[in-house]
Image 1 (tube, rainbow, N blue to C red):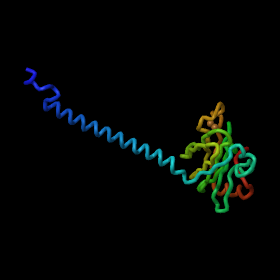
Image 2 (cartoon, rainbow, N blue to C red; image 1 turned 90 degrees about the horizontal axis):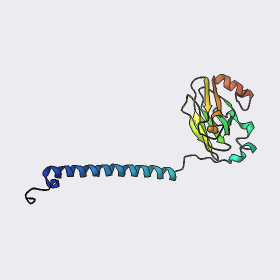
Image 3 (cartoon, rainbow, N blue to C red; image 1 turned 45 degrees about the vertical axis):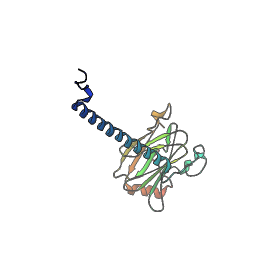
Image 4 (cartoon, rainbow, N blue to C red; image 1 turned 90 degrees about the vertical axis):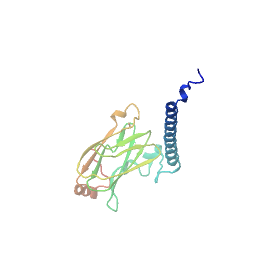
Amino acid sequence: MSDETPALHETPGARLADRIERRWATVVILIMAVFVVVAAFAGIHQATMPQARVETINPTRLHLGGEFVETNLGSAVEPDGAVTVRAIGQQYSFTPECIVVPTDSLITFRVASADVVHGFLIEGTNINAMLVPGYVSTIEARFDKPGDHLMPCQEFCGAGHEGMWARVKVIDKASFFKMAAEQRRLTCVE
Ligand code: CUA
């Protein structure tokens, strides 16, 4: 009796199902292999190719001299008319706490942390960077219209994190450059 009735897995239908299942299993394995290769490539590429520009700085000596000394913070006009803003983030404030910038100008923010990782984010723009102690974060921006933006720290940095924020005031280009002619470093700290 058992010689005449083929086992279930030997019927033509079962064999077809078996083939389809194997084919799909192969496709799934290939898809996973592609993902593994892509993830490995992205990871290794990122680890082996440094950023185009990495500037290091000693976070414990920012206030003692060099670019981030207190008198050098704020907005400055470069000889070519571009604007550079230098600021520091530390537990739990930014210096200066109010940054003033002109409309329609290329603005380069150069920001450093004096202690732990902080976040540099300007609301209403796509500016969002981390301030990692030991490195200078450089972000270029352009503002089309005057206005006020909040600049909250967006990386948890300790008990006072929520109270760590500053403001960015975008003012008309002509007024900014008039002020800049009279003062070496500009801020809107009152
Ligand atoms: Cu600084 Cu959160």
